[in-house]
Image (cartoon, rainbow, N blue to C red; front, top):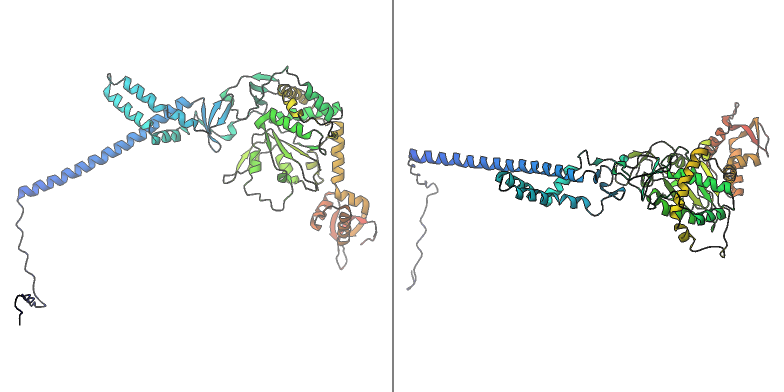
Amino acid sequence: MQRAGTLEAPAAPEHSPRQKKKPTPPRCPKPEGLLRWEAEQREKRKAEQAAANDNDAAADDETVDSDVRISLMLADRMAGTFLYEHGGKGWRVYLDGRWEACATGEETEIAKVIGPAILKEALGSTASDPDAAGRMIRLAKRAMSAAGVSAALQLARSDRRLAARPADFDQDPDLLNVANGVIHLPSGELRAHSPDMRMVRQSPVEYKPDAQAPQWLRFLDEISCHDADWIDYLRRALAYTLSGRVNEEMLFFMLGRGANGKSVLVNVLRAVLGPFVGSVPTSFLATSKNDDKEGASPVKASLQGLRMALANEVEAGSKLSAQTVKEVTSTEAIAARHLYKELFNFTPTHKLWVRGNHKPIITDNDEGIWRRIALIPFERNFSPDEQDKRLEERLLSEREGILAWLVAGYAEYQRHGLRPARRVAAASAAYRVESDLIGQWLDEEALIDPSMTCAKDEAYASYIEWCGRQGVGAMSKTSLTRALDERGISASKTTSAPRIPIYKGFCITSQHRPF
């Protein structure tokens, strides 16, 4: 029943579950003219897309061509003033006699000049050749973009006029670059600076052959205890250090307790030679059980190009690594690796100078290490009343005279060689004797006789006891056997059972019992 005033929704039509869809009436075929027109439109769109692709490719080709042209223009402008050091510091610029690493974007600044120069040329040729001017303007726009500058610098790196390697710099061991030229050490001649010499390091001091240094000479006389022989040797050693030659294979050790002039001497040399002097930690020279021969070696890498490598203040009781000393005082190439960099080799130019109040322990007794050690004693001790707090400042006022004194000393070195001073030779020989702990133990506790034998365990017990009395560390039994073998004392075993390990060639004096 339907209420008044309301409408009842019509019932949904009932559908059969299998109701069929009405068939789609067949389309009328398109007129032939319409089909032809649609085909033409499709071909037109394809042609337009192909043309667009060709234009993009042409634009890309033009960009690449532009970058190459810009890089060549940049190389023309950079040649003689800029170099790119592959595997080293990157871009370098030649300033005041040396190739300085670019630190403030100098290479970018010169690259930014190329675009305006091209644009100026383009605007000057607009009337005579509009097409060429248009191409030049497009080239200038590319050269003045950040992407264009970056691309040109990247491409210019490989230009043969600009490409360099670390080994190309500071090559001549007989040259010393100074503020007013380049000194040829064998002749003492001062030559003009030239970018072709490829000098990187440079002393901040001018070379004036006639300059004098009276306060410096007085200082040397005082710290040497008025020993002219000692002064002459120090001069030859320091003059040899000026060069890049390492044929002497020496370690110079300046020994003396405080207030003896060592620090003043070193600080003055640092100021005179500038970046030719570098520091190495004394721990680098110490024996370590954890040396990683394949790992990074930034200390060794830092030696490249130095003339003087300084290690300061050897700690009491520290042991010197004979292997490290031999490696870094050798004439052979040194393998090194900066952190996160590849391994590389370089030819050494540095001389190793160590200073300290204590002698490091050298357990090796072979000639290979001891022929390298020159112990320079600093035996003068200045009381507080004698000490001049402004001495270093006064000496540096004579820096030109000190440099002239050093260069003149190179002629003395060429004539006489190092030829150690009497005090240096005596101190070095005494150092070797007192470092020979095995020899001291044998002298005090054993009888050397080729017919004698000694049980290994008894010999080692004697050695351990002796080291304890001397307050020195003892080596392992294996190391002791190796050290004795170097002295002609061989290890063996008794022929009859039980076969006891023995040494042939000595016996402990408290035993005298053959096996």
